[in-house]
Image (tube, rainbow, N blue to C red; front, side, top):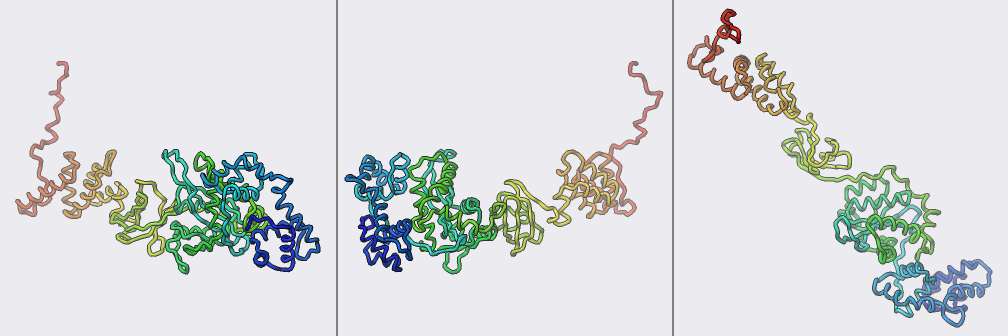
Length: 526
């Protein structure tokens, strides 16, 4: 049993076997001790001057080891451990059984309350007086090089009140652990989507000051589209992000915890020893405290596997081997696909973007970041637009056919110039038509006027425009009626000599009729 107290002679036997070259497993089998106990005795003995090639007195070293291990519980006739912890037995039991906190968390809360005791004493006290079961074994990760591998995993921490929504919401943690040093970073998030994953990893790289060469991730949907031992399919955005920062994605095999052993038990560790039993104001408060906890608590603990302090190992042995971090954070893009509409536009994010005529009806792929919209067809970039907000559009008028561009651009000068090609009267009629504060409201009529000149000829359109201008009749539909009436009268007369003659108005009078002779004018006061 790991909590059994061994004698000095038994400790000497352990040291002798270690000096003879036996490994820890062999010593444990031979002595009947737990491997953790053997490792603990050897570690303490090494601190007392023991080594394989040393000639030191093993009995003296074994006695020093015995005193260090059992000194807290065997000083004098009484038991100081029980006298310290028995007054807090109910609180310890409530924390362990009621709130289901880990023993490490209970030890931290006792120290905050001013109760000075060692973890080993608390462990034995909990087993003897509360009935806490022993620990189970853990999975050991293969040795890696400094800066080579980091492991990532998502997990639920618990629930926290959201002031914005006035309700309790789930809170998640993204844990990034460096395999070599076991130094870790905890990112707090409300979701487990792709932006949360990339944002958490980016924060972790900034926290570490660099990037590892490989990143082992669980088969989370945000990063892995298809889980496979040999041919996994990664999310396109996450793959682009890995190339941007320079690391290789290494997905763990599904339902195989040994593939990411360094981070496998970190979610429960973070939940039980950091989040549980604490009071937080909001998500930002949790994040600030998580960074402090990673630096001062988790980073400075004696790690159960390496028996070293992760933060010290990281700063002294691993940090210098990390890849350099990009100066700018990764701009997370969105990918999608659309079919080009007959109006030369696609809709993405409730905004419109134009494309050339030849792509109408074809399916294109879209990549949109915070600044640009890139449109691909068969893997080639065919158009780039600035990103528009909802309800807006980005239109390149060069994408339209040449004969439709003036109308789309509301180019009034174009139509005036085309009308002048038919004659001065037609040009003057077009200028009157497209005058005013909102000329583009008459662009349809402007197009019709150009078509009339092509249909009836420039001579007839010039005569009709002259007559319409004399009556200030600026309406293309009435203008077409004038042309048709003139053609009808020509057909009735049936002579070529009358073709093109404008029929005078029914009530027309000569200009001399409106002139008054001077002698007929009288003063107004007469």
